[in-house]
Length: 465
Image (cartoon, rainbow, N blue to C red; front, side, top):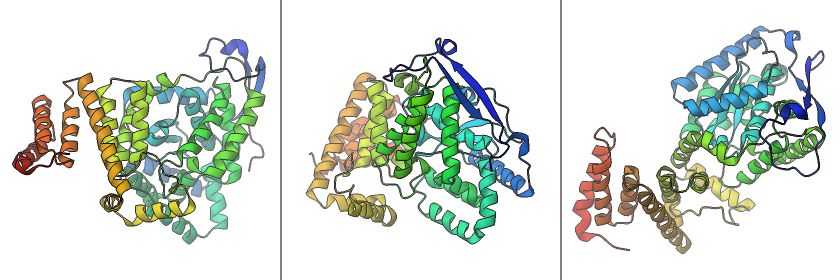
């Protein structure tokens, strides 16, 4: 598949990178001159077939549907940041025929990224919310752009057309859709499934072992040539592996596959030990969080809506720790604790066992969110956990009000919490304060007025904790 492949060679000199942002010390002294080869794919040797053109048209169709359904997150600052890292990774390699590179943020809480053969590279808000710095993002984008350079979608499509009957692909795709999750996670899958099942499967589970290994190597080379520390990619794989236990995922993605992550981390470390020049950059976590905060905020809200409260707590805690005193992030953390209900913020030891995972699977697939909460509340442990999470939520909401007494959403969320706790007079006071501070055009004013009236009617018989 790779005969006649055209390679572009770059020589990375320390003197050229010295002016760039320095990375953290990686131990042993790095060589001053390192030669790294970055593949630009088969180039003109690749000839399009009718099947290739059809696949390209399907990719364009999915792009259009993602935009139409509002799944692409548009934020000028975030987009500028993603573009800057992506363009740096692309470097001056020639753009393949029928490719227009675009780096897009998909509003999907799952930890994933993928690229279409037309050059559209999607990184989920769920993955952006987990990464820690510029270099880790560069590694992800390097991997995904490598799939485009190497024409992997077309090669995989040709191979599958020869080896697998269409019915088998449809069955696999149906499985991915049935375990798609909730909210926006399910929407993005359904759109891809309606257009092209192969592109759906590649975006979730990845390509063949050979093609993924090639993309990892090419991605590491591209990020290194761009001036990023390849050690960061190994760190990202470790981070991804640790995060996979936080929430049960009916459809683990390529970026949450434990056996693959272990091997990919080992490969990244081996590459970094041989090809890390001096002066490479990693980027600070604080600056990264500033750049991707809009994606993290969007993702926390999506996590809450998609029955992923543990992930919401973890991501909101990152923002609060990085930006203490910001009422927006404090309210997000409080809302995340409220969403936990009777569920613990971290998986219990029992949940991490084989039987525990099987139980979680049954609960996710067969129970509604309310049914799951009701089952937890039948136990003393669940009741105690609910009170603990409510206390944490209240503390954070009050801290947000202390940070900014004019931040209306803090009062609204505190009102929700008190109403759930049957503290109707406290809920009434906070709903009233919210209505005083919220804009007259606020879309939820009518809803809050109705809840306020209900709380006022119930104050007579309220129960105080």
